[in-house]
Image 1: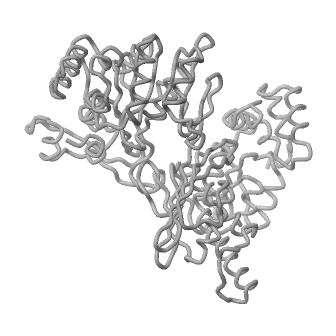
Image 2: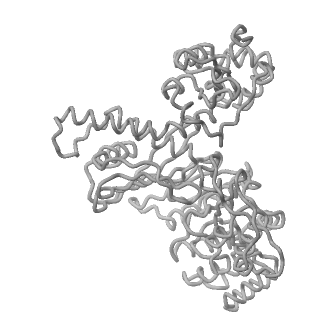
Image 3: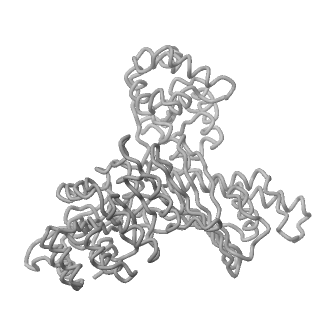
Length: 564
């Protein structure tokens, strides 16, 4: 094999392909020294190149095939050929035997010039190795998908065995569980890594009568991933509490904690909540990433006319822009996207949040702290003396906060915030219910964005079919018209759920003169909605139907997002 003779180092190859300079390689080698890490990891982590650049350079130089591992089903007989420790050591994974020669193993590699890896895999499997190129991110995700569950179960098994040996199989009080024990550390770490690589937003660790159940919330739905013996719960909860800076001795009352973790060279913030239940503590961990929150506004999924309306609202020099929706509807993402759009050197932006979900360069962010009486209202009063141009309030929760926010907007500040209401029009009456005078609402509110998140149908397996009469009725379509829609099926790419990813469904109401007059005159919700629709607003239901007809989502998802 020509590749085995060449033995060119990755750094030299990248220089040859003009992807990297010699100075950059020297700097990376200096950073790598003494760390034991691969040069490719160091280059990517320090921003010299990207993973995609490495893949393209390797492909051009070596003439090897590139494999996209997402959605690839790796047969059981192939998975059993090599241990997971060896795969992680070399950042590689075998994905199939050659269909024409069973003695050749196709191996996805982050560095196909790593001869030691090729030799070791060949010796272990007693097969000839044919290297393919794949990104580090794809390989680690595939390893996690194929071996993650067995890894955590193995860690749980080792912990149980070691504890039994240490305690002579006696049942002692679990308060003094040795959380420095390597298996439990590995187990918790594996849980977190798996959840992140599977795009989970939350991890639920639940104490049931005879077992511990672990579920991941992926694309808004909960899926069971692991089940452990309930004897592991004290050790798991103690380990998580230590990581989150919580009191490990307190098990009788709820606690909150916070931690950070780096997975695949990306930082994640994890908020932890513990709750005493009948069978032990339930722990929920919310996973968030700065990269996921601070998106380009084009990624929100708004059509052209609604994007124009969104831009016009953001261009207002003063007033209030409100984002509404239930918990988990993507309000924070929309707020941070708006702030990133507004974040310029010429403006002073200050936020009040509980908690601060992402650190944004150039923005002054204040964390609410009720212990020292730093509430939304008290922080707002201080902020107004800080010469702000734009103020972001994490949530308007009470009359005092609402009143100060309105006052700030009228006195020349742009205020963006969130409220919990069902639709855009209902937000105006909700503010009135909180005690804000209607003439002030009319003068201050620039626009309202109501939103939900719907799961996107998997592009690899969705299936077209004719819509039923009931579905046409729900979507207010002509019952005699032939309409095709898509439904979820399930494949390896989407983990047999039929869905992959989520997209926002929006209802954007820009307040015009007619709506202002109706607010001042105590107009009904129906009158306000009629005026908003006359001005071009599309409801959540209408935008949801558009997604169904375009094959983006299913009827069931649309109905969840826009109940009528």
